[in-house]
Image 1: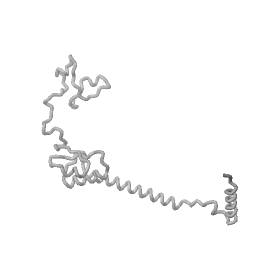
Image 2: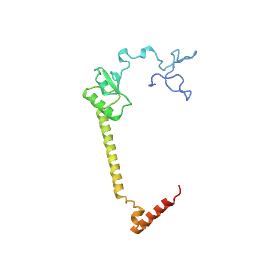
Image 3: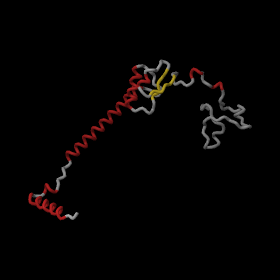
Image 4: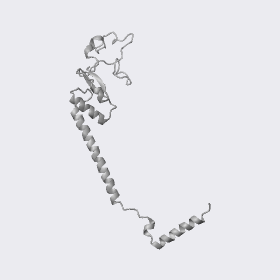
Length: 171
């Protein structure tokens, strides 16, 4: 099988995953190394120089521009996932200028183009929304109050009634 190290008897129970567990049974043939599957042992380890490396570079986590200045040639950067799009774009541009390898992004230029397209699309949608809102306000007929429709005599009568109501009100 091409899966590497697989747990013993993983196919017998649905709840068991294929992830490696050391066989510890007294009568286990896997423990005695009599099976055809690989068993984890020292010989399968990678060289010390290559351990904890990605694409042959030592990963360094970056979350701001000041951390980018201390990167050496044998190190590559991993941009933190908690960084927003603006700051991420600035970090990527600076890394490309300084020819620093970004380990968690495959193609930096394509990524920058994608973010710019999304930004442009979002700004266009916002502009269209504002234009539609302004257009809606212009075309919307203004609400006329009741007093505008009444003649001058009717207005005077309403004012008199209002004054009388206020004067006769008990406190």
